[in-house]
Length: 267
Image (cartoon, rainbow, N blue to C red; front, side, top):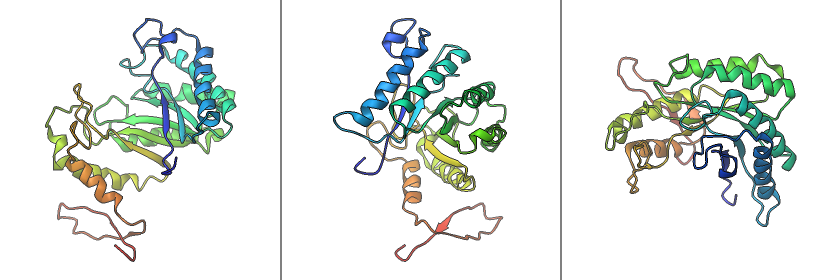
């Protein structure tokens, strides 16, 4: 908070007292009321505890439609969201609550939004993920974003709900150690996608996945497991240093080169 960087809490996965199968955090006992009490307690402690902290966003679960992370049903997740969104908001009237951080399942979108609209549940942001090659109906990112935009737009009660693409990578999910994601091609793709995101003002959050390699088969980070900065880190750093005020950039359409330009009195 001192640095103006409030955290995004992503409440995942199922804690041990609520696991249907002990030791398996993907399994859920079905006690949605207790799940809600747990999340409400976190929110209350963050706001009222010995060292009060402002939380940027409270996200209920991560990829509940992905069996790698949740093997419950859609209905079970909806009950979890119902209880926890109310509990979080009751614990902190200013809390920004959202979900479902859906991975790739179009059929989860409408039932979730229907529940929120019908029961007037808190939904400050709708979160979703995208990697090239995952099985959304729209294969390309613009189509995925547009489908979610349309789903929100047909529900007037959700007019202020933000869209958060809070897990994104320009490359498909296949990151062998030392693969092409470690070299210049991902840096170029990252900047290409950044430029497209700038043309989508209603997409209010985009989170790159991910900052550091975690090993265990995932080598997709901007920096390596031992702290080496990759080309994609340098590309992100170049963009981060750009001044706010954007300028028109003209490039020969046949050059194979693209770019962005900005300037201020110092840079």
